[in-house]
Structure formats: structure tokens, C-alpha cells
Image (cartoon, rainbow, N blue to C red):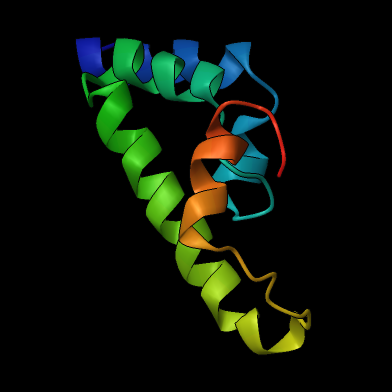
Length: 87
């Protein structure tokens, strides 16, 4: 077995979530991103940024379905919120 093929076989056999991830039925976790980095050399940070961008795009598609009122925040109240107190 070639080195690349052996790495793919080891990766596939160790984590049953891999098919769900590849079929788009599961999101990429930090653990899975690290496994992919170790198996294929693609940086975990790159993979997680890609997952985050995808999640943001998918949420933006549903943005119109989310209904709520904006909460007014006045400039002088922001410092109180940061300190954990409310005016």
C-alpha cells in the first residue's frame, strides 16, 4: 500500500463520523479537523475557517426566517455592559 493510500485507510477506519462529514450531514469539529491535519497535512486552522465560513453562509440563507426586535443600546450603556453591570 502506498503511503498516501495507507494514511487514507487509517483515517477512514478510526472515525465513524467521516462518512457523515463527507456527505454533508455533519459539521466539522475541532477533533475531526485535527485528524484531517494529521492524516493529510491540511492545517486545522484552515479547515475550521472553511467550516465557519460555510456555517455563516448557511445561516445568512435563513436570515429572513429569524424575526426579532432590535434591542436599543445607548452609547453610555455599553461600558456598563462590559463591566457586567447594567444601568
